[in-house]
Length: 351
Image (tube, rainbow, N blue to C red):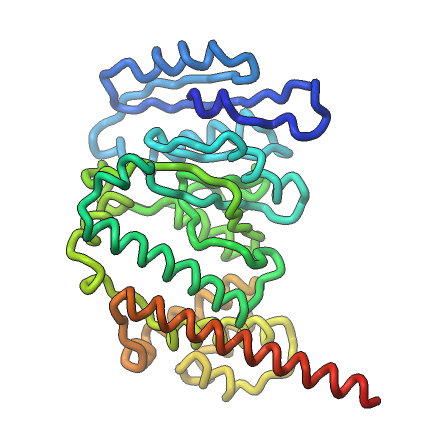
């Protein structure tokens, strides 16, 4: 609550206070969360806090229902032209988080925005060395994998620099987008990722905003079946045991998605070439290309890819090896783009 009170939202029109409407859903707790939150919120004039305390049956009290109820409530308060933002109780936003996270939405550049999620520095320092090492290698790998993907399959709505995270601890979307996809999907786990997939399925623009940062708990005992805590537990085995897609696979997947994007948009591309990129029979892509949304076409193509020979052609590798491979592939992609640009300039100047 203190972090929300410290949000700097007066970057234009200074002198006019910008109010933050916060909705706090407290479910199945016996501590003083609601009371303490109200006391803290009262210290910040620009912060309005609404609190709901609920108690559900154990079978219904998971994070999926809690996030759905909270975001439905937030959407109702924000109105049809509003923006709703999600974070978690164990997460501390930077002072400019709300400003940076909502900037693409306020500018009309995207319907959703995902912020960077970092581990709390003090808790990260207390992690076992194997966990810290694997975490750092994985972060570096994800960063360079995104750089490679952005080079081979650029997304105008999500340009480089961007990051790879889209989770409920730092997520914003317009109320219209939230309504359009039907809110939080009916899933058992990973409801935030399911929401993002629902947005992508309808080609809602999602911006991965590096400047919007939050710091979350590095605890290794969580309350959900799948989440950051389980990830940290897996990393305890050390980097040699953490295997991820190698550079060749990341590059191949980016080229396959770029090819499908071009074909779906109507650019001439031989179906046999597209089939080669995806490693699936041409018939498996024909239906995908008839989809109303590119996101739906990609979802169908990925399902066919995973059911085909893709996994036999590409094997996961240790994260340190993968990091080196994606950086090498990125350098090759940049060099090729530079050579292609030089050739294009020469051809233009010779006319």
